[in-house]
Image (cartoon, rainbow, N blue to C red; front, side):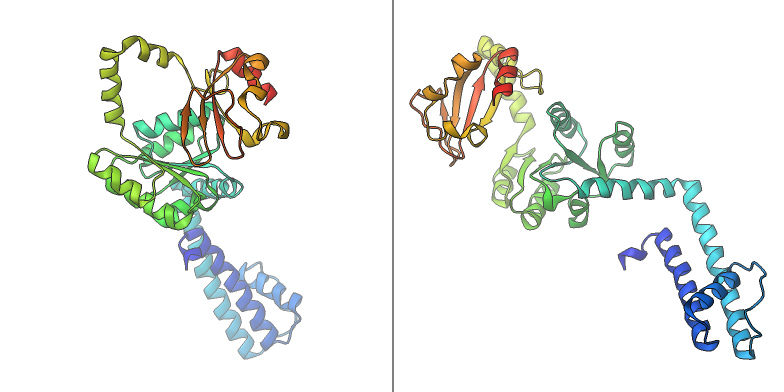
Amino acid sequence: MKILESKINKTLFLVISILAMGTVGYMLLSHYTFVDALYMTVITVTTVGFGELRPFTPVEKIFTIFLILTSITVFGYAVSAFSEYLVSGKLFEHFKHKKVEKQIAHLKGHTIVCGFGRNGKQAILKLKNYNKKFVVVEKNKERIETLDAEGVLNIYGDATLDETLLKAGIENAAFLITALPSDANNLFVVLTVSQLNKNCKVISRASNDSSFSKLKIAGASNVIMPDKLGGDHMASLVTTPDVIEFVDRLTIEGETTANLEEIDVNDLPKKYLNKTLLDLDLRRQTGCTVIGFIKPDKEYIINPEADCKLIEGSHLIVLGRRNQILKLRELF
């Protein structure tokens, strides 16, 4: 039984069992009421020295002796377990896990980040900047201590295991980023998520070209190859330096520093649904420019025409200066 895996749980189970056994025993042997039987059990196992409610028969005395000896053993184990937890810090860790489990249980639509390496750190930094709720899964104890010190919600365990992802709230998660160093482990995570939550969008890291197609087949919505992206970026600084420099200045770092914004058409006022970009007139209202349109089937249109219809389920990519983006957020 999983509930008995912890020494604290075992101790509580044994203490409750002793109290239940004593109460039932006195009710059967001495015909006490429940309250009297519980009272006799408590004063017996705690050895406070009070007398019995009425003289015991030999059978009752033998049962009481057995109850005393058993309770001494159980309470000895309880003191030993509690001392071990207190000295080793496991007691505080136990309560920390309980607190984390409660916090995760209340999360809906959050992001799970598997791995707190270089890529994982960059991922949670961006999520923090956008005030997104997330949980980090990591099996390195030192990194867990770092996350605790930073106040980051985390789960200690192997991300490739079902039980670890369940603890991280995978059933209610909207996104999962797996940034583990091994492509094989990332593949295991993607397969696990596809079984536990088919609606969860998975973004996976990959090191080898051969892993790209496997991760996509397994169910990853997006596969990112950091080394390849870095090489492409450096080469682009040689071939088209001014274009890349301009794009680098289009920051999307956070809620207050963005030049690019994504708008869900469903979040716009109802009067704009099935209208055109010309009707929306973002340029006049905010100063921002629509540079991209994403159809519900994920077809991307760069620099859409003014007569492009704002159909349900579509998205707009908007470009503007920081003050214009802030005005855009105030309006929509």
